[in-house]
Length: 184
Image (cartoon, rainbow, N blue to C red):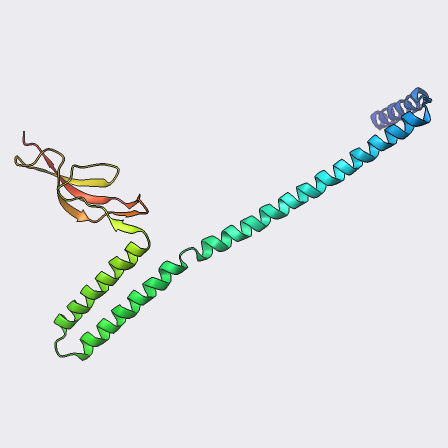
């Protein structure tokens, strides 16, 4: 309690001292008007800065919304093309089920769908990584196995176990490969 009273007393004394320290300054009217103009410019600048800050924040929010919308529908063209492949696959299954030839019709239909799918991927900038017979490159290939082979140079890709793909020149998926090694 006593401490609170001391704090209140000190605050009051500080306010009284501040009032006593205030001085009256005499300015020429031109100087006074100049100061008023500077204050007005400062307030105008402050208001302009606040408006610009609000505009910047609104622009950031709008760009975030547009980015989310873009990401949401970025694959729309690809999905549309995949729907055509899905339609082809459904027709192939229906035809194979209703046909007496069965497997041969189904196989021919699947081959056509694969060709269609490869063409669609090509149109979207996707192409397979050429790997078999090439020298192993860890940027494009992932070695799953090494096999001794005296006939091939070391690190030659003997077999592609899973195809790799590039999209617009960038690795989408590395090729999983079997690589040669020298016998010991």
